[in-house]
Structures are given as structure tokens and as C-alpha cells.
Image (cartoon, rainbow, N blue to C red; front, side):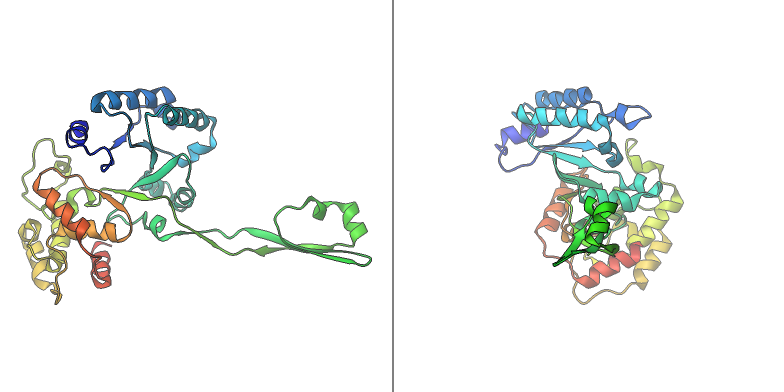
Amino acid sequence: MAGEAVRGLRLRDTTLLATHVPLLAGTRFTDRLPPGHVQQRIEATLRATKLDALPLAMLPLSLPWLDTSAWADLAGTLSRLTREGKVLRWGARLDLVAADRDGRLADELERAARLREPFCAISIALSACDRRGLPLLEGIVMKAPVVKKAKRQAPGLLVSLDDVADDPMLDDPELAAMMGRIPSTPVAGEPERVKSLPILAREPLAGGALGGTIGPGMKMSPRDDRRTLDDAMRTKIAVAIGTLAPLVRDLPPAASSCEAARGAFEQGKRPDHVEAKSIAELALRFVLDRGALALPRLHKKEYVTTALQAAAAPPLSAAVHERLIAVLS
């Protein structure tokens, strides 16, 4: 369907069609994304869309895997598919939720900030509810390197060495005796702030929680993955939406879905100037204001209008951003 739309409406030069290469089943990450599987999925997508090349292909990536020989094999395949004109750009799809659960979120963010070739973008889950990836947009402060500062002296000569990370002459005993070296001392370098590649924000509506419709008694289709939410979680979501409802013009259905949500709405303070029409627009603008590209799942045609309104709107005020974070923390 996407290929037909791009070809039929002649949108090849104005629309970025992205595809996602899924992982295979398996226990080891290296077995779940072999080079042959990536090539097969890319070629299958080209046949299905009837496009000459895929503008962007996203790969689920485990950053520690970049240090293995398996990554070298896959990187060669990615380069070849690009040379052959089958894929124009590659993106990295990261799972910060798993990294946070395993206690390695800080390392994952730092490594993601340094991620470059062959990738041109990073995809992460990001919303007003899940803000773990915000440092990538704001700039990661890297650990300051430790450098050595030392002086070597000889008759009629005094040499100052600054910011020397590893000078073999400093550790040579004979040279040290001859030069009368003053011992080097470790000195902390300046911290470095690094911004990542462009960020694609998956789940900007937090799995539909920020759509403004989830509440107790809500009817869902048999294929809706939100059917797994129990009444306690639906009530919690509805109360949060009720608390945020004074910030928007249209009352979201969740705010009136139960007594607790209605109470939260009635106690809320409405600002003098309401900046958004709906909770979904508010949530999308939160992500867009941070400099990310939002990737919402839109199940109905009328939702497209909300997405376009969010994309065309000016930035939200700092007060609205602060209120969103306070309610959803």
C-alpha cells in the first residue's frame, strides 16, 4: 500500500518511506540478524513496493554487538546493498527500555550519541511518558578524558608536554634519567557534549495512553494490543488524562470515563491560553518541540488531521512542558 501511494501520487522525491528489518527468533543477538536475512528482507520489500530503492531501512541494533566480528560481516552487507542502489540510508533502532532494565542505560546513551556511519538516524521509544532518550536530543555529556601533563628538561632545554595521553618517552627509564624528567601527573580533561544523529521517536503517544481515549470500560477490537490492560491500569491512565485535560480545548473521552478521572479534571486549573486542541496533539508537540521526528501509529484517517496540526503548530510554552512532565513523572 505504501509503495502504491508513493508511486501513484508521484511522491518519490518528497516522501521518506521507511522500512524495518525484523529480528529472527533466537537467543543470541548475532543469530537474530544475519546478513543473509537482512538482504532477503530488503529485496522482498523492494519487490512488494516496486520502488527502485528504499529511502530508509531501520535495523534493530544491540550496541555492544558493534565490537564483534559478526557486526563486521553485517556492515559489509549494508555497504554492498547501498552500493547496489537498493538502500539509500540506514537507521539504527535501539531498545532503551531493555537497556534501562539491565542497568546499562547511561552506557547505551553515551554510545548511541557517538553512533555514525553507516547510520543516518536513530529510532527510540520517546514520549512525554518515556523520556529516557531525551539526553540524545539535548546532548550527552561524555566522561572527561584523563590526560598527562609533564615536563622534560636537559641542559639548555626545557620542553613542556600538555595533553599527552600516551607518550612512550615519558615511560622510558633511560630517557627519563637523561632528560631529568619531571614526573607526569594525571589531569582531568574538559567534558565533551555530543549530540546524536537525528532521532525518530517511536510511540510518541505512549502506546495510545496519550491518545486520550483509554479508560475503564473502553471497547477495543479483538486485534488491539491494548486489550491486555486491566481496569486498574486503564483507571490510572484515565486519571492522568483527566489531570491534563484542562490544557486542551476538546474534552478527551478518558477524562469522563470514571469518577476518579472526572475528579482529576474538575480539580485542574485551566490556563488563560489553551495551546492545543487535543491530548494527542499535545503529546506529539512535546516530542516535536524537543527536535525529534514523531512516528505515531495512526489507526483512523481522522487521526491524520491531528498529526498535521501538531506538525504545523508553534512550540508549546515552557509552562505546558513542565506541567506535562510533572503529571507524567
